[in-house]
Image (cartoon, rainbow, N blue to C red):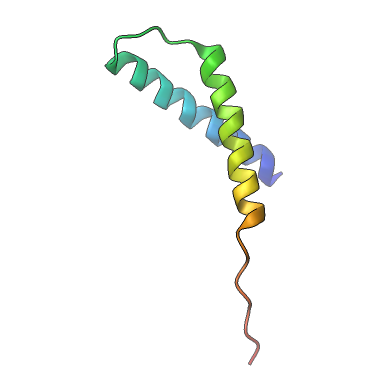
Amino acid sequence: MKFVATLFWTFILVQVLGYVASAMTNTEYDIKTISILGVVATVLIAVLAAVIPKPAIEKH
């Protein structure tokens, strides 16, 4: 479920970023290319989350 939520929000945020960037650079907005970038960003976030070590919890 965590991966699905990450995919959803990354997809939305990358689409917004792509739309704004295309408007600022006066280029065509291509949903297919930006969707691929969203999936790639989601995979990179998932890999980063798996690689970063979790801190040890101290017991008192």
